Length: 279
Picture 1 (cartoon, rainbow, N blue to C red):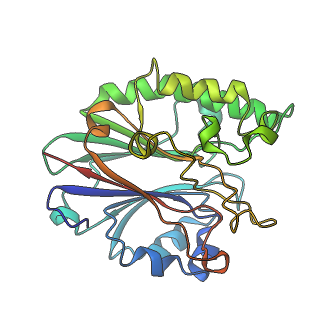
Picture 2: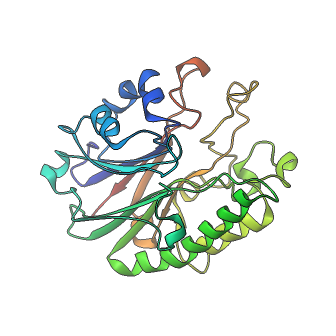
Picture 3: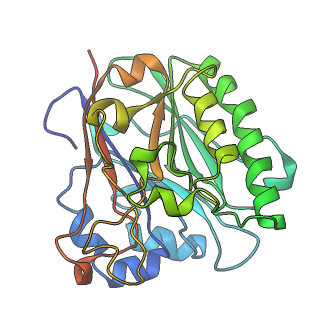
């Protein structure tokens, strides 16, 4: 776990297939990182294999597969010994509230009790990548609509709510290196970005990484495998921690665990790791 007795470390990463990620060295990143709560997207593996790779002796794993085999899949893994087991989920739910997405493998929630006695609903989410003027984009907007409904409900469930994951939208020009060339592409469309205006506006959540980083480019969390995107840091910031204000105020650091070199990456995404210091 994180060094401080009252600090909870929460990480999110799109693994781009957990079997491939483990072949490429994901375990070498995870073992020493001190993560208490680990959220994964694009697991793309059967439940049995996911649990075996993460090691159920170490992690409590809650996972939902997609009906389409080899697609999507999200999980929340809780380190069993974190705070003497206090973070183990009291309840786990699959689905965002729209039956259309029930078997899509894109939304899972855990309720946990934090070390300070407050309650947290933690979500691992994987928003569709989309494609302009196709049914894939229609599904993306429908999912974002469902988020607009579900996120306020989560904020009312307990003391804190935190939605993390690959949300496949860069909110502002600071979030994409080559934003000018992407204003008509899925991931940076004005209609998509307007949802994030609402998430961080009327809905009342806080973009934790942006709040801590300030008005700077990135830090990016995804780089295409094509070309020299990683080497030139031509990335996108599309992985988020979206927290209700009380929890956001407890965030002390947000780190993107960018690999040292292109050939040492275990995914095209890098983990986003946030430490929350609880009073």
